[in-house]
Image (cartoon, helix red, strand yellow):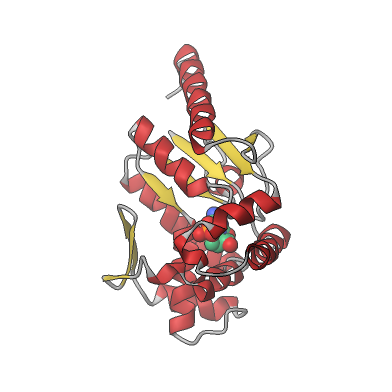
Length: 224
Ligand code: DC
């Protein structure tokens, strides 16, 4: 089964998704890294980020692979290169194009298929669009100042001020939630968890409880 973990940046999605995946013994797919790879391909090829057709052509001309958290483009490990500011902004910019999203979503779905059809999948539109039938849909939120403070603890934050991080998160939230194609929003049937005042352990516990309840319900109803 797919466990969808959606939400904006800085809510602790990756950490939670990783921990949940380990606990339930499923692979973990960070779909942000697929849009980051698309952004990096566009930047490296000098493709204008606002030209969806050109960005699609650029990503179709390379081979993007994700193997156990490592991302390669044409066989070259780009995992670290995906974490720069420039790529963060480019990933959000290229993610507005519907054709680019269709291509990237196909990659995500085939990754899950190749891993036996079950995974913890984190992103922005997993519960709404990529796996709308996922039996567990989690949407993580947190107050903006909490998200900025969390981000400032990440290595990639460098020596930016918390105010600057907050402004960048807000700008990306705006792009991600106002785009027409698969905007960032909770699925109607998602469980929304405000993580502002919870530790990672507490969030993981809540998610695992939801997974367990779903598993019991599916067993009781005989669904696979
Ligand atoms: O989760 P992240 O910060 O690595 O994501 C980078 C960008 O990719 C994000 O700003 C928007 C885009 N994205 C998306 O549009 N849909 C997803 N499922 C995941 C990420």
